[in-house]
Length: 254
Ligand SMILES: NC(=O)c1ccc[n+]([C@@H]2O[C@H](COP(=O)([O-])OP(=O)(O)OC[C@H]3O[C@@H](n4cnc5c(N)ncnc54)[C@H](O)[C@@H]3O)[C@@H](O)[C@H]2O)c1
Image (cartoon, rainbow, N blue to C red; front, side, top):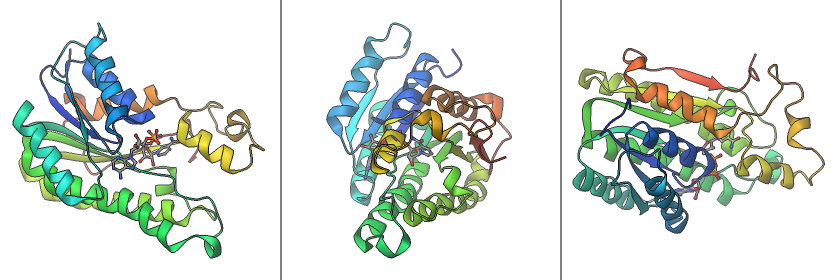
């Protein structure tokens, strides 16, 4: 077990990527706190972690937390610290896809919401989480392919996912004196509820297989593969890796 006793806080912990990562890190001995605006879904994942025979550590937490509310983020992370000890790994992962419409049709409220969750939420997670971390820890921020590429039909999401890479670089410099590494992951087209929602919003005219047909490795990325990379960034195998953006995309960005 490579993460025995390490405390891990995951925002968006009840979603596909958050839950897969929670399972992986818990199997490695991590004590996982799932922060999500859906506390019931977070509790379902927590109870699976606890009953999972392969999950060696216990003491996992599920906490309701809306990352757009700075007081809630502060209180939830403080609770993780007080109940589990200093945080070793912070996974700023909560995000929403927003509407898929041309710029002229993109609602002002929807734009603000995507930014509030995807950008302000990451800011609050860093601001209130880093002071509660053990020196030598690791922060991972979830960006996207659309943190590198543009999308004509999702300007809010591309804005958010580019912005977090800037915050990642600033935080990597800010926390380096404490030995805290900060990196971003850029998931590709993940076999996930989010992508299924996007396909449905397109009127169901395209399948996941068609969407990934031109991806060099010709397959969708499953959440467990995202978890593999987050595990690497959490483990001591990445001790001098900081300030990086790692695409997990089956070659989509090539
Ligand atoms: N699924 C993909 O293909 C894909 C690709 C690239 C990047 N991403 C990014 O990965 C991250 C996780 O995505 P996912 O596929 O697991 O999506 P998901 O929809 O399965 O999970 C997102 C989770 O975030 C939670 N959440 C939403 N708003 C929140 C808020 N205000 N406060 C706290 N929690 C909130 C949701 O309740 C949900 O549990 C997101 O940042 C997403 O943008 C996903």
